[in-house]
Length: 236
Image (cartoon, rainbow, N blue to C red; front, side):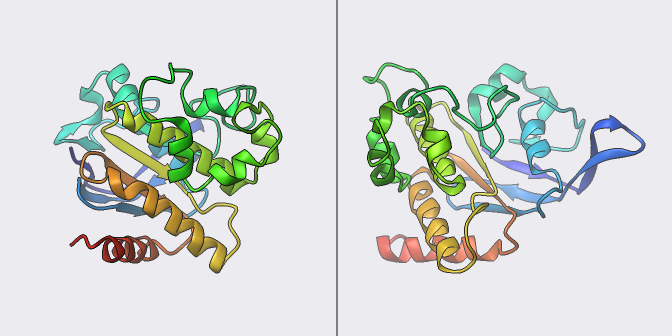
């Protein structure tokens, strides 16, 4: 599996093709398995639009290559099954103001699937570094108000847990995380949250292409965090 944007491009995402608004997608060298891939994009530049391009929800002919083929050569339903995009807004469009609104946390993370399939939801929450917090909110995993009780970074960790659960089903080939550090305070809070994400994603890297779209302004810090995780685990 590989993902590549051979050259930067601009994409109209609504309104007028002439006057915008526009998404500005940077070039991405061929990314693959085995390590964390990072793309730097300023906030407001179109990261969500790029996620939609990957799922063929927005057209971008001959701009994005998936395993050497243009993304539009794949069936949209196949891409929806193989690519998981974590975004702050409900994705795709939804009447909910935050992802998972109206569902119990258990239903949201476990995709409403029988509990005998995939990894246990509690294990996914643990790997995402959010289990302790979830167990201390009213009704725990049975809460339907979790999206309003948790902070923005905490809600995003719940979405990470959902992505880990879906990956355990074996169909996910590409996982894209858009701006995982949004809502974090600068400094130790940001470093701690980044370390949680890298630790959670590390076991996936040999089988799933993981792309982090960093909008915090420090894409290099993700690579340093990955090196630290590898050193602690003894991996090369």
